[in-house]
Image (cartoon, helix red, strand yellow):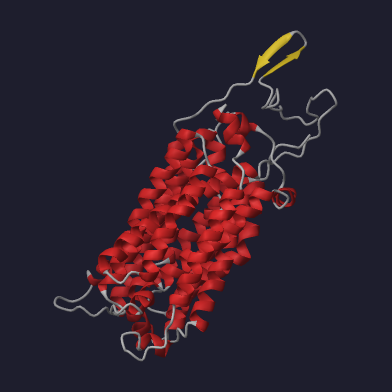
Amino acid sequence: MIPRKHDSRSFSSQGFPCARRPAIWPPAREPYSEHGGFRMQKTYTVYAYRWMVLFVFALLNGVIQLDWITFAPVTVDAMSLYGVSAFWIVLLSMSFMLVYLVMSVPASYIIGRYGIRIGVGIGAVLTGVFGYVRGMAGDSYAAVCLAQFALAAAQPFIMNAITEVAAEWFPINERATASGITALFQFLGIIVAMAATRPIAEMFLPAGSTALTLPAMKSMLIIYGYVSIVAAVLFILFARDKPPTPPDAESAEARYGMFEGLRHLFRQRDMIYLLLVFFIGLGMFNAITTFVDLILAGKGYKAGGHEAGDIGALMMVAGVLGAIVVPILSDKFRKRKLFMVSCMLGLIPGLVGLTFASSYGLLLISSGIFGFFFMGAAPIGYQYAAEVSHPAPESTSQGMIVLSGQISGVIFITLMAILGHVTIEAMADANRAESTITLTPFMIGFIALAVVNVVLSLLMKESALIKEDAA
């Protein structure tokens, strides 16, 4: 018999635990058991407090995304104020991908071994402390960079627990919705950073001035530091590992340890297909959002113009809508594969439009379609991974699929930068006819990879757990 999570007890042949702590009896898949003339029933309870836990966790997810993308809207200003090249400003965002490659597995182990409150709590403490440090030392690039890498170390402790929180607190017919709400907060964090960073900094400028100053930049970072502290404190105060009784039978079942879970995970054909889907999809999304300005410059739009901001913002807003609607439908109809396939098909027209359209209106529509279906698929994929890899820990499956996307993001962005001739000089020439930046071939390649994702999602089988719940 596999021991329960955080539990190394042995069991006798009659099923009684040898340890002093009481066991959960009868087993979760056997709601009734006969013993000594008594008939016992296992009860499950869905607690209203699950929404409080989800809220403080989702808020923390949103804040770490805000901390990640802080400098994207003020890249040129940051280069000038800190006296560094574009590479060093881009590194502030790239640090999150790079650190995730190193910290994902240890973070998943700690979450699975010690639970949500300690595992995610580590991420919360790092977020609060170094969000504040980044603000107080905001006039020094070296200090900001070190704080940013510490914030990057917090991310896997937070992101890798998305399906863990859903599994501990929510019945299976609400888990995609719970993951979708967390994804919603992530996208809201990105939207707030993109929309509010410059206006907040401009609040601290002298009257009549429009050029950002270092004190204004530091003041903006201090405000974000306070936001990070609030999110961290709320999580520490209100988060709990699990409810007194599980929400359903599946939540009460035993889990493998992390390393046994990894071995089990990589034996599941459907999980391999899903890892490939996320490798392609998340890497593609990271690359497109990174270079959207230069993709539009190749269509005749001014680099740094409002068009790139509008298109990126609409992509995120549509993504927020997708992250709400698609998981709710998936839970309602008890289907995972159907909605994964639909999303993989749905994003292709958006990708084609972003590649070949030149009309501003068509580009806006295309970005909305792409954002809706891509971001709508993400929480479905997270929950599908947890279900098909069961009884592997949810933090392990979550960590592996996000890790696959981070690896491909680094690969795709690097290849586009090198083979597409994206240099500092070329970026400066992006508005000129002699610009050497060529990203259209990569976009065509992404369309081909999106078709591959449709095939991979068709090869996946429906989740056995959701089919059992539907029955």
